[in-house]
Image: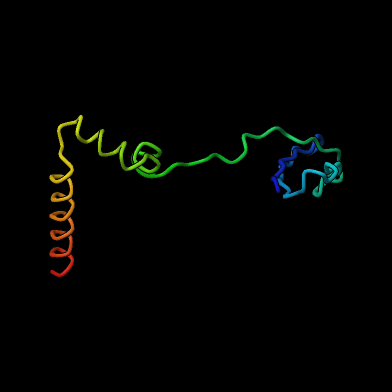
Amino acid sequence: MPTYEYRCKVCSFNFERFQKISDDAIKICPKCGGEVERLISAGAGILFKGSGFYTTDYRSESYKKRAKEESGVSVKDDKKEKKEKGSTATQSESK
């Protein structure tokens, strides 16, 4: 259900209501009883967090392997590097 934003034409009071799309728009200000108008708002934004969204998260393994080969990093070197990073993280956590 979307959140609709309203503003009173009389007292300029702004408020929001969580309503179904099929619900009628609110016509009366809850503060002064005046007429209200529904505002057009930007809505909720979508945030993609983390590095490499799509490129690294949703590509096939064969694509990732070919891309690493083209960049000059072998798959064996990459696996070795990941193991080394994991062992140094474990060592630092145990201190």
